[in-house]
Picture 1 (cartoon, one colour):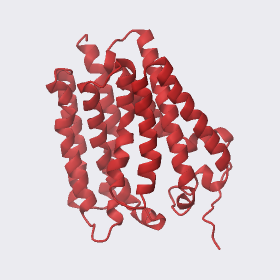
Picture 2: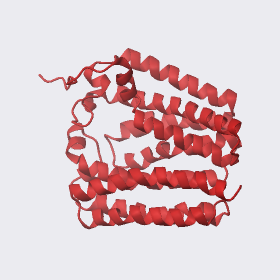
Picture 3: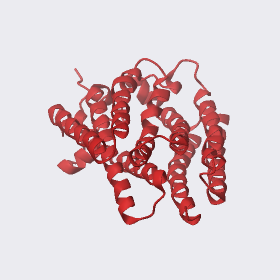
Length: 301
């Protein structure tokens, strides 16, 4: 009888296996968005301030890394059923469940304590809530309802809000605007991935929009609607007087580059359009983050 356990074609180093467990590429983005949220709370280019922002980003990364590990502990059996996740280290046995749990505990405690003692209680509470929502709500909901995508987008957008709260000591309008931007950005990205791997998700019993009966065309329509919603959301900082013309022009151009492939995917759900949308989403967020960083500097704020 199959156990759902796979082997890795080429043995990996312990470091590479842990990097995979922590989802290194996502971890880098978490660090950058958390640090950016902190920097935008102060908009102070001083070296010491930038180091403080990086410190907040590191603590946020540690807790979200803990959430990622716990997610994989819970889903290790279903991960073994999916082609895109069957080489994860908990599935292959490269890292034991015990070691993963210890790593998650240490990472979560260190990150939370770092935010609480180096910054403030608000940021620590927010990051703990983020972990709980991701592990205890989003993870089990994936097998129950397609609403998991909406719930999962909350912890996905939280790092920038936590970073903002860490440096500002509060959640201001710009903090919420940053959160809303990343929240909306995730849906076209998720819908493209969910459509591309819909058969994989179905094998694992995950309830994603493209795996539902009669769902043809729905992933594309959702992707288009959320891509369109990015326009007013990303203009919120400018409407609040917190961003200038450089940001506005850049944000509108980036929105077009995101909306066009989303519309193409909505018109025809196929692999080419799904990949084009996913690629656009990967380009969009770092470019927007760069704009958010550059605009205050150019305005001398």
